[in-house]
Length: 139
Image (cartoon, rainbow, N blue to C red; front, top):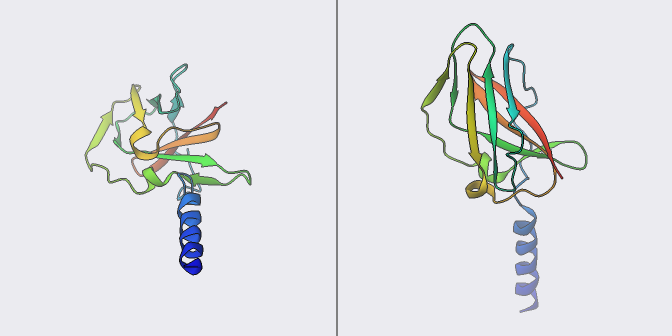
């Protein structure tokens, strides 16, 4: 019986520590696409979501999927992706933004990883195969 309890405690500890921010980022390089930016819209950040502005400052049309990755910086300065966004199944449909236009992207991460606490975060979307990130702090 004691071994069963010990095993149960170990398993609970492992799964309990495997919270929202475990997988190491798959994006070592971000924001290398000239003229395309992603920024947090002022006064929209909540524990369960935010609105971001994706701006196409290029002379051509750009395309992105309606998918995102949410990451948190750990105490050692490494980005860790929330398990919910890492394992999400996203639609393959793409959205276009014309030259010089800005799209408003309301993001609700509550269903994928719950609310976020305080810390440094970044939201990443892929635009024409390039990782575009917006870093933000929640205090």
